[in-house]
Image (tube, rainbow, N blue to C red; front, side):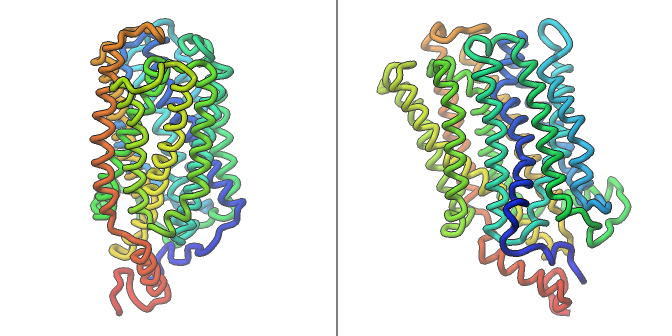
Length: 482
């Protein structure tokens, strides 16, 4: 039996291909930055929606989208065209996604939008983004089976994804939403239009750049689609032990990330009282941290493996990220809003984010190893199913994180139309305590499961040998000599 993917490229990929593949993640970076950093404050403080309703709509949209993702992944695995399994999705979804994104930041009504209206637009944007991102990420195991080269592909994806998001963040703080204009409606319209243009260019250029490499009929033609078979295949993939362990680790990490991103502007505006200059420097600090990860994570994976790297990076990131908040509560922090305070915060952000991004890249790359382990056990490749499953976990978890952030803001007593420097100290202390407690619990949960991921590099290499032997007809897909 010849297994699809047995002839997957091994060894180094051309730099051009890595750049094109990575560039596709700009769309995700633009979306993720907008949803996570600005959407809550825009709909709450600018348009006047209740923070709890906004966070509930964002969280519910994530969960609805997450339910759709596994079906999108299965459909991607089953797509059978002369352009391959993934490219048709990228070409079809790019323009509708860009239009929906611009609409999100320019609701055609005055006053607070309705809960249902916000929910519907958020679901549409997220569903279309998934139709681009799931097939794009699912190309990684098809492009290479090399343990480290897969990490390299994700290094480029994260570099471009963060770059796209941080460019929009920087433009927001400098051009669209500087100073008090963050609390004005007009700048968000231009923010949405430019974001839509970047999303469209990112998806289409990435697809065109990879077209020659991946545009061919799949090795095997899938059977006709049926819901029963689709759900059976999704269930089978999601029952893979390694996937369940990784999903548990990712759950804690993504809840924490969603919570942190959603509450970011509240923390920096009200708790740390950032100036306009600090908000401009902040995206640059994040970019430097991602660049450091880009240069170092490959050697970490080669030396320590992906599970150990993710485990220790989680603990180090937690320690560095929460230290300033603990010191502030203890009264051992310099004057809030001063130059020293801001410089120290940015320093802690730089180093802690290095380790946080290391965790995310490691976990994403670990999903690729599950693909071949599953193929050995079942004889079927399911890249789309596993990466959509990873998205399922990420989106549900991020939705929970955004909801937690909204509840923290509400329970802390944060007033509507609050002004930096005028919020009661007790309110800011409550917000800080809630945030620290949640961060610690989530990080420890995540680290526990990431350390237990069962596929090492040696295991992966052995799996590839089994698949190679099966492809040459020496053994069957389950590793049994005929």
